[in-house]
Image 1 (cartoon, helix red, strand yellow):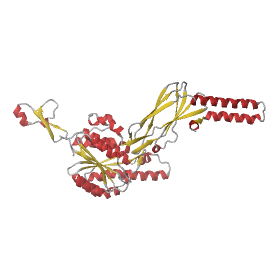
Image 2 (cartoon, helix red, strand yellow):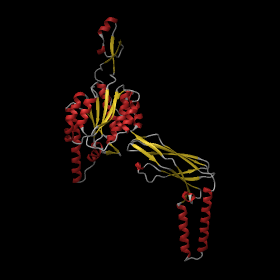
Image 3 (cartoon, one colour):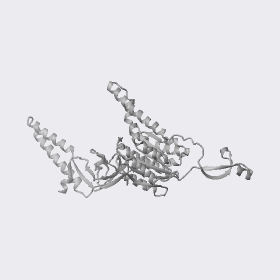
Image 4 (cartoon, one colour):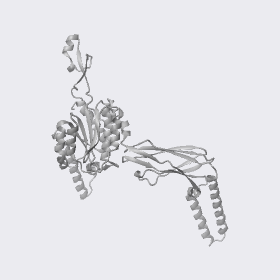
Length: 443
């Protein structure tokens, strides 16, 4: 029974068999073809038997392994490699079918390779997950055909494997050097104009050409009888919290990822930059209640705590309760901090419902509201209108786009900073805003 489970007839076998059947039909009108058809049928059976002997009668076989990363990076292309080893003494044709996790909904995965006698081969393919969680691979199936290619032998490798999908650690590596680079333009970041001096004094040193004469210390100059200047350094150990709204407004998808996952990926990268700049990074999410809390610290394990917390964010996309967020911040964050709130507002009315709570948070903290522009609306606005219906659609789209800009003005009126960004630019824009606040010494 195991033999028949591993035996598969290839398309070439059926094509030849159909040709022979057609020959028998023609032999009814041309009797001279009758013996030729029987000869062809005998040859088909003989070569099929020979093909079975070549693939099954020896102990030679195929070895295959799948190598997947320990964890997937959400929203990025992740590489999976497959290694093949041919132990047959002749060249074979291999068809590889990997049982990919159901989340990808890939139903036509098939890779064909030719393996030389006792040869090796390796190939890669890529998967892009769009949801956090556990992804289960099934078996790795390899169908081997001899040069006759009439039948195939199936080899099944029980390579069952679970790969968790974490927030985008590939982006984390990409922007890892940002915290130390002075030439940020290469990453697409804007140049920040530094205003004034920070208040953290470092030392008094001798004046050298290029020092700011406004920092001259006249008392030290008089004592040493030479010019002395005060030297300052960037203030460190400031507290930064990333607050992620996991309510209904964050369910909207762009390029397969929800706004919530874009915010999670950006929070991971920004946390790394914050810690590298010497500040304290913290995190929590909220919907009906506040969850996934990581208090702002600078300890070595902080990035792992933030990563695990972001990975474990789960939501049913309920309506967000901003009053509970306000009470929680007032209760648990006692000193002035930078709070980056990832959320989304589509209309000014939607903002006004939550504005009293945002103003309450902004009284004691530096609040930055990060929300999203609708790229689909931008495409519709830039599309050439050819019908009256297109004009109506563009007018409505422009109204919604104008409301987004109006929200920025409304927040600015109450001293609340904002970042209006496209989902794909979220990481860069939030890092920009953080570096700007650091450079200007606003916090």
